[in-house]
Image (cartoon, rainbow, N blue to C red; front, top):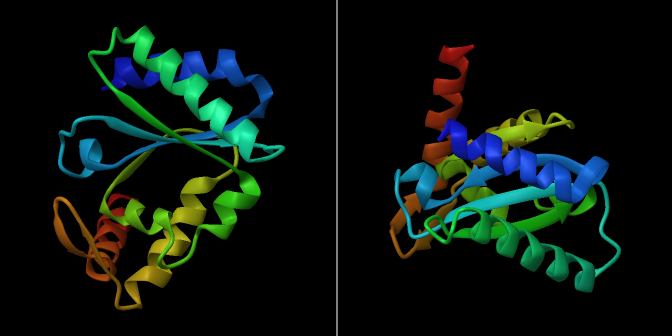
Length: 152
């Protein structure tokens, strides 16, 4: 995975330049260890609107998928810092990060912000249902936090 990560970082640094803030891998390829695609959350400093967001997501998907000859399929999600902070709450799509994520590039301490969200989530009662099953995100967040504490 390290080779994959470094290639992703290089390509996104080239494409986005100084706008690039963080890159987070998440989804079934992380929490199950396999999946039909690699979900990638890209944080940039700002987005001028929905059109730019959609255009950038499509451009990133095409760039990464072509670069890996479609052997690895990427699904890109781009947020600016404001959108990221707005989504750090229970029930948002970022709640799913509790299942598993990997920060591979970070200029803004997003790991700390995610850990704070996990702390809040661990104190709630939140269940997520997806095609892989029913997930008690509160309990999973609690376990992830204990593991992080042991590793630091």
